[in-house]
Amino acid sequence: MAELQYVIVGGGLAAASAIEGIRELDREGEITVLAAERELPYHRPPLSKGFLAGREPVEAVKVHKAAWYRENRVRLRLGQTARSVHLGKQSVTLESGERAPYDRLLVATGSQARRLGAPGVDTPGVLYLRTLQDSFAVKGAIKPGTKVIAVGGGFIGMEVAATARQLGADVTVLEAGPTLYRGFADPSLSTFFQRLLEGKGIAVRTATRAARFRAQDGKLAAVVADTGEQIPADVAVVGVGAEPNVEWLATSGFSIERGGVIVNVRLETAGTNVWAAGDIARFPDPVTRQPRRLEHWDNALAQGKLAGRNMAGAEEPYTHQSAYFSDLFDVTINVLGDTDGPDAVEIRGSTEVEAPNFTALFVRSFKLVGAVMVNPNTVDRSKEFDQLQQHVAAGTIPDS
Ligand SMILES: Cc1cc2nc3c(=O)[nH]c(=O)nc-3n(C[C@H](O)[C@H](O)[C@H](O)COP(=O)(O)OP(=O)(O)OC[C@H]3O[C@@H](n4cnc5c(N)ncnc54)[C@H](O)[C@@H]3O)c2cc1C
Image 1 (cartoon, rainbow, N blue to C red):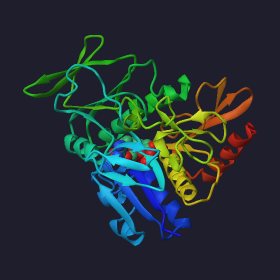
Image 2 (image 1 turned 180 degrees about the vertical axis):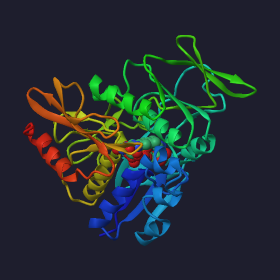
Image 3 (image 1 turned 30 degrees about the vertical axis):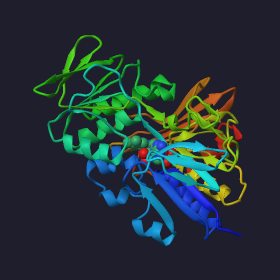
Image 4 (image 1 turned 135 degrees about the vertical axis):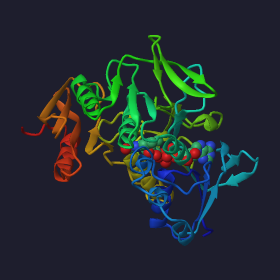
């Protein structure tokens, strides 16, 4: 039988994991990766944490070294952006007009940073953080004493704020909503994070929108809030969410809903021989059974791997329970299951910011649907994490 032609569009973690999945079952097929960025696939979490802080070298963020792709006979075509897919002809068209035929295709084009429409957003000193190059730019701009404003109080904003503070910057977080990270849907958790940041000397301004960026001498001088107040700034890092990269698929015949490419339980799209994985996939969540799209490292890792295996013929369902992690100073946060719209949130343990060690249990219809674990990074709660995953899967509330 002729060797299968696998084409992977993307070049992030889901793409790299898919190669591993394919090679577990098929050593012979030809694998081509079409990746818009000119970097080997890399991990994004360190871009706002260890790499940004200067604790991790650039080599450490790469998923694999260049030799790994050679050993696995992967044709990595970096700097190649896909423009469309022709499902009938089974080919991908690149920006250059070139066509890349496939037998099996993976769509893994991830997300990009959501842009802010505020006047002055193009001023030098106003930065986004999605790519390795963005992280180099943010890193280069932050020095001890630099006035940094994190625009957006979600995880990226909080992480940038914490890292910038560790680098000695004078940091303010601006959040348009009433609390930090509304994804928790629980004010007491948001309050905890606000106290954590404030305890380290970060100014947190909720219910404050960045309305305008004011320049002086060609560079950022202040962020103007919707209240009219001017907050002096050398650097503003905008972290107001991400948008999945689906525009290039708009005319290709895929089912796209709320920004995600719809896949079934085997991560197959509506197109024959086409799978999707990672930030871009809207998949049936194994726990809630509801369609869900996640922007999580762990999700890209697990889905990429399974999509790769299924492209090579495995036909396995996606049963992995995704989780999200973050680090703020020396505190580790793990988010499991679904924390959207709970009926009740029960916090067990200490929310003392100096030494937090607690779990927030998210309950909906008397079932455990999600949990948030917070503790110093020196504390190992992996056993409890596994048990909580089981409770979330079963919907049972652990004994107190
Ligand atoms: C700063 C930062 C910190 C994060 N921290 C955490 C964390 O602590 N915990 C956590 O769980 N998650 C975190 N995440 C999220 C996590 O990194 C993402 O969920 C993960 O990277 C998704 O992987 P992916 O492969 O699906 O997509 P991506 O990593 O977005 O990769 C997709 C790639 O496809 C390329 N591409 C797009 N369009 C095309 C095209 N048309 N043709 C060719 N290539 C294309 C893109 O350029 C990109 O390189 C963080 C993200 C960022 C940005």
